Image (cartoon, rainbow, N blue to C red; front, side, top):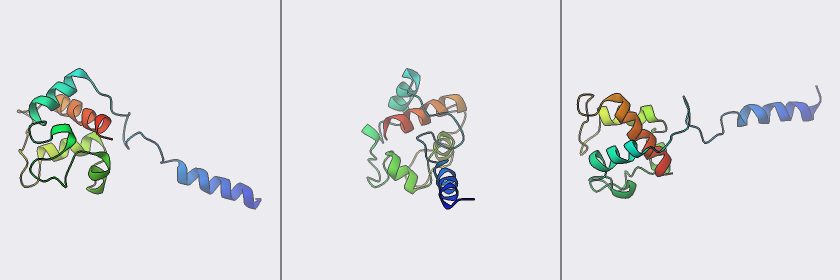
Length: 111
């Protein structure tokens, strides 16, 4: 196989994972319900994607990614089992469907 073809195949393989779409699903979409749920449940501690408890742990994509949070499922997992300083939101408090709307809102809004 010519060297150029091998190079193109390797390049295509490396770039196959390079998209704006989070792994494991469709891209996040902002909905009015997601925005409202975020405003009610999250914005008091995370105004404009910030963090009033720990300013280093914002909801902005780069910071989330630095902590291994890149998908809506990752955000829901953190909501269910947060670290120190964050309120725990169980499924009775925020059902999975609503938590997913919040997660999508976060990923789509705080890029």
